[in-house]
Image (cartoon, rainbow, N blue to C red; front, side):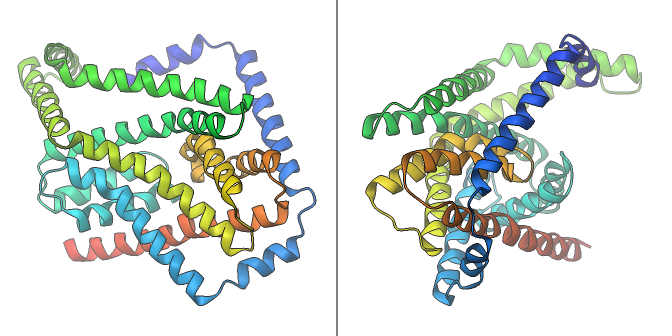
Length: 339
């Protein structure tokens, strides 16, 4: 059904509008990148990257372990019988696959791992759906909280206000949809019957509407039960994740020589929260997120662009390169262990 609706939706968007949007996006991103790299001393950046002490590397590795633990918390909470260690294994493997392969490769590897560990299909699908939805709700809500904190502590900054308003509205819509879906048993039954009829027409040998109705009602009731039991913990873990992500970035900036004080840390954290939805872009918004974040921080501090670039590169290595390597090794280990 999605394949038939997508072209129709695209057809309603005029091509000139799409082209203008792409041009504007390229111009904005290009301007931000030029602003970021202008005046950067790349020799100093290289020096900062290659002269981290052993204790600093050790601290970053511990911080990465804490980050992975928080990332895996919703899966461990929402999927019965999974456990924390397996949730972390599944999460780091999916993160690696998502980096090097197109979607939905990460979902496929998650489901395959869960099945190999004997996790019930309904449990797996329900937990993954809920964890992903909560992740995007909090990701979209982060700019609104970042704007409020910045406004209350320092000043009204229009770019933060617009970002908080737009992304906050998206988070609210997504949250309302989730709450409705958790209570809409009749809607789940209706959608199940419709799916059954569609599949029966496409493939007469497929299972009928009543079977699909029972599946979706079971999925809906199971999801509602897990959310009522542990949903608040899953939401809390996602809020904690934003704080941990921002803390890791501040730590990386401090390790390359950025002098921190209360105001600077506040600007760094709020800027990251406002730009946080950009991590949903491919490669965690590489380039776009970095340029946007650096522009926000530079507008409110006297930090040098060289230090910002060095810190962001250290952060990229810590949150992207290392997890991808570990994730690929995890996938190889899993395939051998299940062979």
